[in-house]
Length: 102
Figure (cartoon, one colour):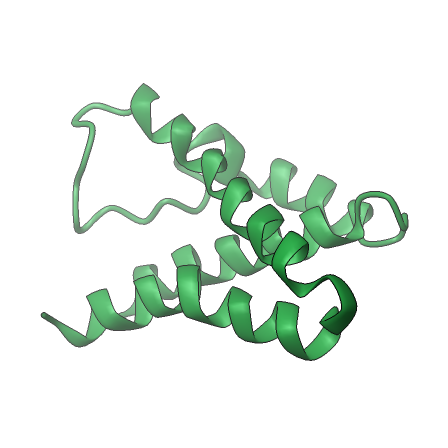
């Protein structure tokens, strides 16, 4: 298992659990499940050819990983109803952005 793999999947699965527990303690399980559900954003990878390329930077390559989409996720931070989803999506984008540099 490589360091890149460990960091990537740690940030996708372990970091959300820590964030949910630390900042949303009363509903941390619900928030964690929302964080995990936002991984559906990766469905846009199905539009790529080849489907999987370990050396491809997802940011601004896939539609839901585009700068435009990231801007919408940032705007979502300002609304209470979308804040948790936006935090999850931005953490996801940060994780995928790290892959561009690791």
